[in-house]
Length: 325
Length: 289
Image (spheres, chains in turn red, brown):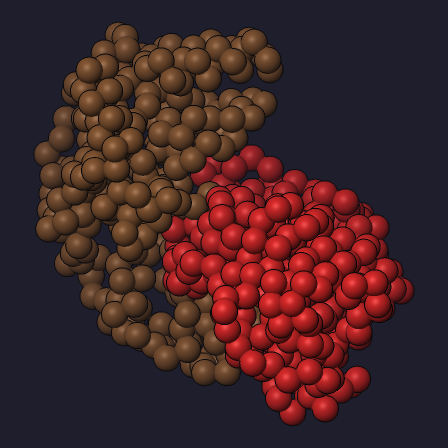
């Protein structure tokens, strides 16, 4: 019998995502999308016996209320959203058996910002350009191209999960409510457009995450940037402002300087444009971005390309069956 | 200029921005797309995607399969083995796009902008004056009088930056200030020296000179051209606009709506930079269509 999940309340922005998202169509302007906190997402899938890549739900700030049509095993990871199953407290980071007709209700995220729900078998929506990940802005992928809406129904593939499996404490991301984050950055690609004092100022300053931030970009508020001579003495095709450059591609994670406002380009970001990217947040730090809230404070910690790659391997090494007890 | 030594700039743990030069220059852009084609052919293990743009390529890679240094040296060796620019040839299909110039759709959009945001001169009038043309008919003749080169895609899915290959057909246009809050899908825009077809209803800043009923991006994948891709164009392709009257426009629109419109594409077309340069040398730049 096919399992369906009825969306009683959609939550603030709940979307279907798969890992790693949509690849192969970036040059036509389709970003990768996929789960923002890739660490929590993969562990949720592993808990319920899915491949780490399987489609699940990303719940942002306030999670959904969902009713299950049939028995299944689910797991909830990432931000603490004070979920209940038919009124009983629902444990995080653990696979749980759900009976037909039961309702999972989430509240506001009290610790972290994004929670991930995996269902044994994985969510079944059509693949668009090779992926089930939702890219809201263009209405691509996911459930009818957008975040969930009240009253919709989600199909789930058949799959047998085992309840009672837990993620070991030291294999989970350390999501906390301290409001202060150390975010790794790699210098480049366009760091030579910023003066040496500007580089130091960026690394020594506190940056506040603005409310106008989403899966496209994270806007930061902080001190003025100091540009290198190159930023002012350039050909007219580069544009007028010192932060303008001849149109070029944007790495995912790059810190895009629009005038004086830095925007960290994340999963659903535009692929190209005419502003410089002096620094890039590596993939290993994305879970921290995903779990922070507006008005949180970032300080950036410069690492080398090799160090960033080593951190990535470290997280990949935790998104495995060995992390389960 | 085109750099003697391309720059390989790190973009975090899984991207490299390869900068080949630092100007808006057709030869440089052709080099970018020829190199991208070579890199794709080479099927380098660990290389995931390429994002070619005006003068640079962003390369995404899997650092567990290839290191920054190895990827750099492999791409450099392909770059060094490319031979002379003059000998390069690229498969470059030509897409034919019908346009109703000075149409009802973009006129309504302009009127809405004037009423709600700020008064501004009609877009085609701005282009006619700024480019010293004798009217809308000549604007249509010049805009449709050249092939366009897809120099880059991005910013929005399916949005292509098109550059006129015939220098006698290059126009210039200022951008909307402030930008529009909406632009109709299918609008033909002109900003700076770049023209485009709006792939969807989006905000926008280019002047609007016409409208096509033919989609360049189709999320529903309802037309045959979109069975494999949601977007019609790739960098290094070409576009040719052709003017149509209202009757033909309505007919094409009805075919698109019915879901059986077939895009007109010359898939066999190659682009030779030598032949292009030779042709440029024969042109009288004072000629106007």
